[in-house]
Image (cartoon, rainbow, N blue to C red; front, side, top):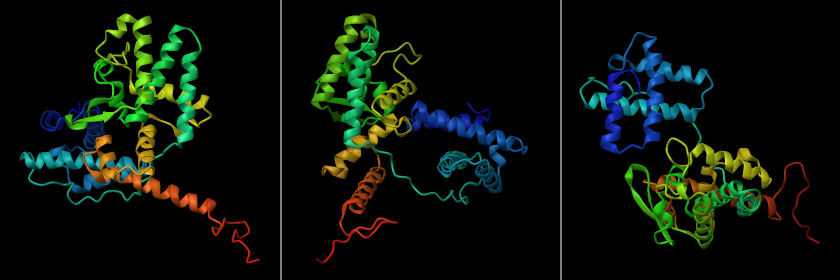
Length: 319
């Protein structure tokens, strides 16, 4: 929690009025603490900060090499904070109103090909087939996690915190509580249902105490369930076994693959938006750009009239 009392009130408002998730609150708290500490070295507080202070702060971040996307995120947090101070009459102005955000290009999401997803699933299945009982359970859990993630496009925080009731309800769909407390229903593929059944059966067989946990993926971690970090580590290990560069893979990349592969096969953008739990369809539209880029590369690589720099023309002769 930032030392500035106004920042504490702002975070309380985000939690109580907007239903901000714990991860969101943690990110805002971290960004505000960094800015307020920098501001304190200027002998200033949030209530008397000037626009120049915000500009200088952003410049210092740029000089330190912080990426434009990270600077934009910090500025977004500061804007919301100062709007709150203005709305609640803690300030008579909003110093962030005149600040321009860093110019940045929006990078396309990383995605995997379908063959790479198949290889990843095969590596997880192989891990489940080898080793002792504990290794088998971890392998089945990883296989289940990957199948569920690729079948549903869940956010990793939604996935690891699924309740155990998922395994006992209608196995064709699951209800997910996402950002802002919004609920959505996502269907499960047959492969995902089979992986879920295999994992929960093995969990009940060799770890009945854990099987009584309220979480689908119980763990000794403080939250009581598997952590995002642990899942990411296991996913990268499976990537290495599947001859996929671990640097290319994260749980979020599988979420991207889910959306991109649906659109490639003709799914409507609005349907993909609902499945992903995006509040704004503009967030989902980034996947159409991924599809456009892949089609462009397909043409450049395979079209007989395309030219490859540094190589002879591939134009067919006239005979």
